[in-house]
Image (tube, rainbow, N blue to C red; front, top):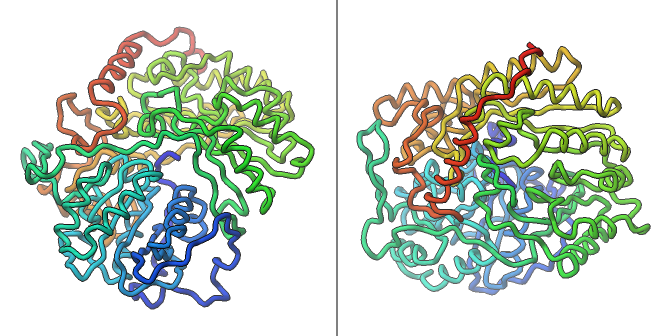
Length: 572
């Protein structure tokens, strides 16, 4: 599941007093949960863990990653785990050994700080003593680039939790009775565990670029490698509840990562290699188990329909005993849309399908390595209509590196072609601004300031032609880029912004307050960084080395040098 700004919740109602967190049993959503695992009875000397999701219960319990980590901990007799959300809590232990956070949306950092305060824990790791629990974090945001949040965590788990989580708990047990500094040094030796305080970051100037990142001494690993699970049993829901944001849904991870490698795509590059769940050993047994407790099934993954046995999976779901289930699919590769898929979705209560096309310009799709033709997109729309679907949402992007206005004109032309080819299909174009992400070939680029006008151009052209156009906020995209490419100096900015309130103006005000102590917003959000720059995540190794990312970038830049196709300007 790829990171993003996602939903932002107002925490004003959450008081700082720890005693206000648990609600009366009658108001608690936990009684509505149907568990698909059996929790273990904790041992008398079990490690006490508070595992938090920094948002409301309904959102947190919908996160498959959060569900799986919680269930993994709850099935260990040597761990006693309690869940904590911004609006709900299970009874919390005293004392607490470990406090963990699963961070899925960048701007939920404020919720992290609020929950720490509610537990009586200092916001910054450097201010904590041996009386405080160790605070750890994981999830897509922290795995991609933890540096803006590094000062708030004692340690961060980078990568897949299947093996890493158990290694962390067992490593902690080995040093549980030792001083805090010794615990952290020991845990830093475990592959995938990053202890920010053990790495020193220097800057060319207070408001300049990073000069160097290195461990504080030779006993600390120079780099931390993201951990990758390579098995063929992927994640499935461990709880189903009507209180979830996706009510009563049972989620099954069909694939992990994506083989397409679109040059901007964090969900693809950060989670390599592409892995698929075994159909007979994993997917079908998991689906059959989940459908015993609910009739809603969600198939998750960055490219679900590229599972090599996806057709057989559809055949299984089209058996008569599953006629009553409601089926949702997270993402569909455009050139895999056929009438069988459309019929299956229609049969199981889905009326629309979503595809990512990025642009109507073949040139731009070549820049980002999107292996689609316009004919593929038109064919997908026609097949969706023929299969009984009523709507199609397309995901596009503005401000892609190398994009020109003529490419935007071709996006308008494509949407009009789709409207003519599939007149009974309700079309929506959701369009975001390109945001650079760590560990991708476009990590060196900044947000194109022209993207804002390009979104407005698309809005004017498409809405006047009867196309539903839904742009994401350009200004919030710049803030997303700020956090995606931020370094440790941003922790002070984030604290300041939190004091001013969750608004765009709060960020501008915080930058003004801290002027001279960190680079300006343009440095993080808009500037193109040189390829030899020291990146904030330089010491954190993703699936591909920087040399490979630079080769992919070079390929994209060659495509960007080709001129836009002629003839599109007739639409203006």
